[in-house]
Amino acid sequence: MLTRSNRTAEVNDRPFNNLLRRLNAADHELLAPHLTQDEAKSNALLYNAGDDVETVYFPCGPSLVSYLVTNEDGRDVETVLIGREGAVGGIVSQGFLPAYTRIVVKFGGPFARLPVSRLEAAKLKSPSLRNIFARYADCMLAQIFQSTACNAIHSIEQRTAKWIVSAMERTDGENSVPLTHEQLATLLGVGRSYASRVIQTFKAEGVLETRRGSILVRNPPALRQRSCLCNEAVKSHFEEVLRGVYPDPEKDN
Image (cartoon, rainbow, N blue to C red; front, top):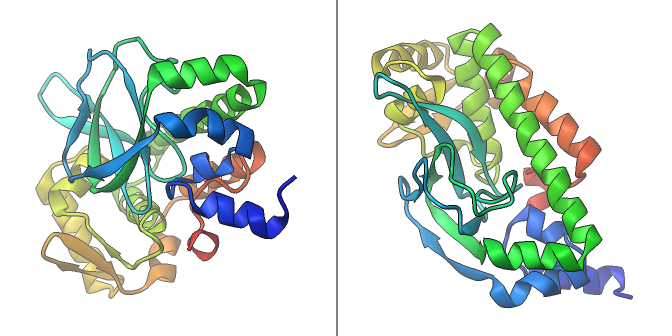
């Protein structure tokens, strides 16, 4: 049995993805020989709708991935952000099925990759591994459900604050978020000019300021006050179902 200090050292040797670090040593050993690591740039396409899902991608560190649904007018609407708390590709569907949405790298950075076939083979060998990924799939669906409700009932201002806070939490707690007006508009499902007006309001209130290609949060408490409680609801579900996996800047660094 690993001691606490040895367990910490063993976990820290893994990719900086909380889901992978949540695995016990035996389950991680089933996956480790097949994991590869590399970098992905912002806006890199992981899957188009209809593509065969053959690879699981684990965002590491500040990397973020978004699910985009394309509407009949050609606009993309963001449904959920996935960071180091999880993975995309073959998680809910168990792979070898077509992707329903476009999956795109929102913030570039390190990723771990794993063939879906290897993950499925490992699940057959380990009930505990199946359990972890089933619980993560539940958490991911909770994020999607909450996002759907949020889009229906909360104001653009509340949703803007929510998305910025969500991105900030997943970028190591840094107050500077590499989010453009255009990307924010996609997150909100509105036109760029509408998103820019909301940002200008927050700037006038001293909550944030904009820099080239990024947003600097000047007053995080004020931003959180303007946000809806959807992020907190998702965090609470993660803590119930898969404790310690949702990003917590105070514990992850």
